[in-house]
Length: 115
Image 1 (cartoon, rainbow, N blue to C red):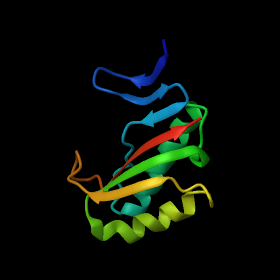
Image 2: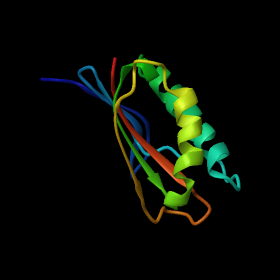
Image 3: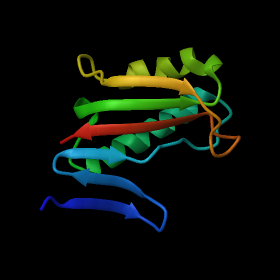
Image 4: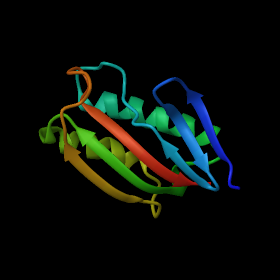
């Protein structure tokens, strides 16, 4: 039987799930800043912290899905992303526009990694 680890779990969800050597993160958002660059930095810092907790890192990303409240923020988000992602370690990635859970949220980042 394979063990599933769940961390930072409540009734609705876990922030981090590990199955074998695959790491799944819940969607990460930033603080309520007025611009997508600052929210992206916050969300990616949360990703870093969860990956570290799982024994992983941004060098081990497999797939990332990014939801933006407005695709007009694509260039500003990518400027932060490009500085964050280590050269040679870009994951498979998708980015789309979606109505997020709170109107103040501009970005949500969903990650699958290995460890």
